[in-house]
Image 1 (spheres, one colour):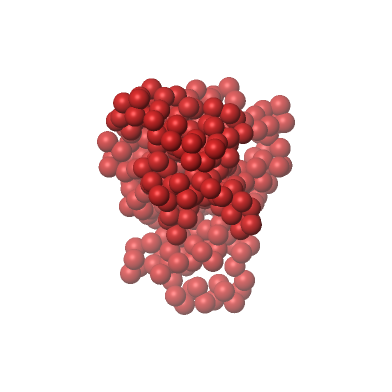
Image 2 (tube, rainbow, N blue to C red; image 1 turned 90 degrees about the horizontal axis):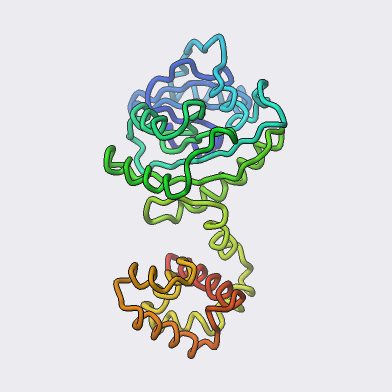
Length: 303
């Protein structure tokens, strides 16, 4: 039952166990029946709501740390709309790598320890809830590429039997606006988490086409789909071929390898698509239009 409050108090935090040194800005509640621990920002709870919550759950008095760590400074700033961490300046830049784990019962300590083995010692890790967290890196600490994060995802799945996805944020200068930029990136990642089918590493560039397609007005959706959807409906294999071809930057060899087909077979399908739609994929504008149509077609299939 306590977990259902996450949809009401969006900035609340679900802990994997009894929290140690929790933020003093949180009410800590315990649900004995489900063995769940949750922290809810005090500023979001009225006196009447607090009285009601206390009748349903145990309000736990947990002693807070006397000195906030760097992690807690970021925790307050990003998750609780607190003040910016004091020891940073506008000359410094940061990026946020958000991660999502597909299991609520994963061991946070083990996973965090594994993550720290991949990132630099100075990187800060904070948990948003039982399945999501953030790695905060300063510009001088950045060391991992997208390909290396894919390898990390595969390693963690092998070692801990969890599937983990990452969203690599943009490098941003430190300022009061940094939280709003994080929240925008969080929205993109939340969008893809609701729709992802396998662990992956995402960036703004990878997510935005699908995000744009999802938010297109119905009239524009029909215009974009004109003539292309019919081809995909008639031949679903054609859809998979064209989408993978575009996702692999029109690289025929890589696409054929991923589809387990001969390059001649791939070229035949591409030529057949162009013949039916009149759209050439070697042209940027044609490729962009078809890729957008692929995103719309895929979303409609999932409805």
